[in-house]
Amino acid sequence: ENQQSLLLESAARFPPPKGVRLSYGTAGFRADASLLESTVFRVGILAALRSLKTGSVIGLMITASHNKVSDNGIKVADPSGGMLTQDWEPFSDAIANAPDPHSLLQLITEFVKKEEIGFEGRQPAAEVLLGRDTRPSGEALLEAAKQGITSIIGAIGTDMGVVTTPQLHWMVRARNGGLEASESSYFHQLSTSFRCLMDLKPEGISKNGNDATLLVDGADGVGGEKLEQFKKMLAGLCIEVRNRGDGILNEGVGADYVQKEKVAPRSFGSADTGLRCASLDGDADRLVYFSVLSNENNKIELVDGDKILSLFALFIKEQLSILNEGEDKKGNDSYQARLGVVQTAYANGASTDYLKEMGLEVVLTPTGVKYLHEKAAEFDIGIYFEANGHGTILFSEAFLCWLETSHKTLLSTSEGSVKQKAASRLLAVSQLINQAVGDALSGLLLVEVILKYMGWSIHRWNELYHDLPSRQLKVKVVDRTAVVTANAETVTVQPIGIQEAMNAEIAKYPRGRCFIRPSGTEDVIRVYAEATTQDAADALASSVARLVD
Ligand code: 16G
Ligand code: ZN
Image 1 (cartoon, rainbow, N blue to C red):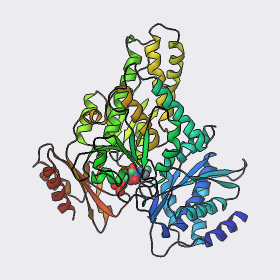
Image 2 (image 1 turned 120 degrees about the vertical axis):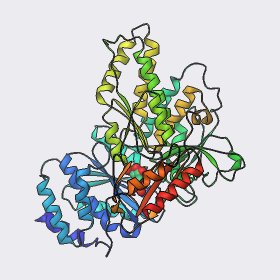
Image 3 (image 1 turned 90 degrees about the vertical axis):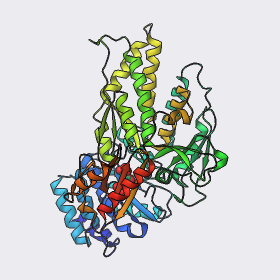
Image 4 (image 1 turned 135 degrees about the vertical axis):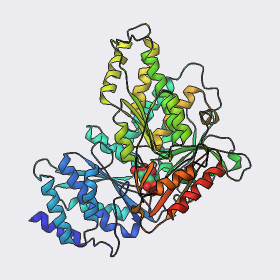
């Protein structure tokens, strides 16, 4: 009874906005910040329940990523540090839209019963780590989330302050693995593994031009601030961070802008021509690289998520082949690690061809980190990236175990040193690269270390393959749910007949490829087209957009 009246009483303080229906979407709730207090309060309740249910620490991150500064949003991190399990999404949707405290209480009571969530036991019974990005609305929303958490008796909310999204996910994972979950332990782990990889680069390499300073666009968000703090711990790497929060968040800056518009962000210009540049998004879970082209009004050479993926795959594959060299097929100590890569339909066709030519297993999933992550976790080493720059590398427990053992035994053999180094590198990568979620800071460090290892400039890297020209359009429609896709969004099954009409358009262009999908974050249908020339990609995209309209 205490619990019920506490919930009713606190819910009354956070009435939902009238006439607004919020939906959990691809990655949590996102809307104009003024609409979100009640939702965030309710997601606080959900997080406390999730912690009770799993007996683990849960995370809540308040951010709207690359969206405009007046927006905000909230996402839940599960015990592993990954996204909230998909079977709790409908509950999340339902409570966000409950019209009044009583209907909210009823939904919660039913759910608690169905999920058999117990309230007795540990002290505190539930714990939720809270983080927010630099948005001004974040502070009040964090407070609302905290009130939601503490309206479940025995639950506490721990404020981690202003952090990047991947930092918060990392902290949740660390805590549940019995480790310290602080920013300094995060920085320590990244800088230690970074140093280890730097020390393991082959002799004599480092000449090839990438000793120059790396210029980073911080999107005027949390990532730039953190990197500015962190860079002092990174010996051997010179970083200059621009857009550290003096301008407006995500306005003409950030990874989303750079990748979609294919232009240099604010504060970058012809004086930077040819230099190695990177761009983070507003909450630092996306990373792209670019280089300014001379005298061409802010045009850039874009090095997107697909190319980061390709660079990582190349490096990992090389370390694996060093490890397996000369091992007989019966394999006493050898371990045939399954290396796989995961992309979405947005991956440039040239990148998929390149990865397949490398002999890699390539899998497509629908858009959204939760799908890619889940698929990548099926491999011993699973690398996933969206073209927009969100991705990471996942290592299986079994493989890491084998790696540690062979790392030790290799110490005493003659061929050991070369193989042992490869094992050390892979172990260091598993420490450096965020195992919970895509992380621009750790991704950036891994890119830098691999470029040093290869002795490559950003141009050499970009030459791995040539992107096919592509075009993205969005079409406003009355009801985006009318479009239903299949096969990782590559085929449209509804409205009936539209795929046939699209096929007829696609057939007009050599290497033409095109798909449509309802956005998970905006009220639009997205169109993607690719062909051998920019004109052809543009024409294909607009003719398909007309079919949708
Ligand atoms: C979200 C997703 C991102 C996806 C994007 C697509 C997460 C953490 N983020 O930002 O992966 O690329 O949505 O947006 O899952 P769209 O559905 O509007 O095209
Ligand atoms: Zn983001």
